[in-house]
Image (cartoon, rainbow, N blue to C red; front, side):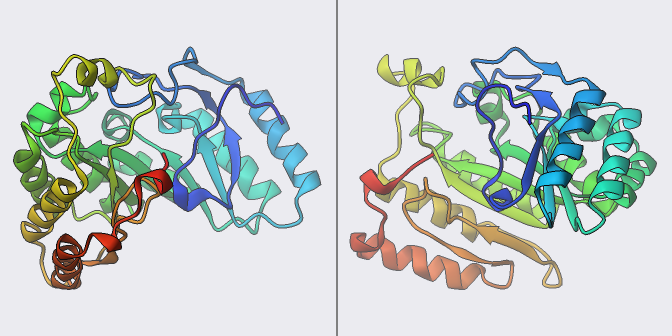
Length: 292
């Protein structure tokens, strides 16, 4: 196996076979992120990817899931993606799902028919880092897509039968924009109707560019109870049809409070837990237990 640099994957791909098809992130400008700052983005040669797949087949008896890394494997051309997926289907007939990271631009560059073709070839889930539904927060964080692009991309993936798992980051608006961040993220989830939505909490590596803003007083981090205020405001603005099912999780290692449920069915139940935690700080994860 040939891996270049640190390899990252979504928490739900913890037990997946990880195959690196791109190295780094083609955007790599998000101010809160330090994941790929040590890499120069490039696409691996197809023959090297296929060699990795063959090597893994000889080593592993059963592979249920495969994740195509790095930051935005969906940027690959259709011909290259289909060649990789065809090899996976041939070598790992037992594989139930292939997952990828995908930016809004990656998804929107694929037509609905192309996305359906990728679904039929094995891609079952795309992970989209929306991070916020507020246009100003997205601009401040140098995200590559705006609110409407993100909504359109998730809807296109879902309509093609590819589940979208969309992540948001609590605290990303700082003290200045926490209300706007909470409300606009809620309305974004409500408009997207993603299969999955995750709510992480801002936790920074010193290499992340935003740390300079914090050090110089241009960005103020939220305190734990303010994070709960933001979560309460966000959940209270969820407005989805009753027959919609969006699996919601805020059980990442970065979170102060672990929540899980289905939106919109369990919204009130999760709000009750948040309000209880605001009265009982013992329910919160200690700072020293939090992790990226």
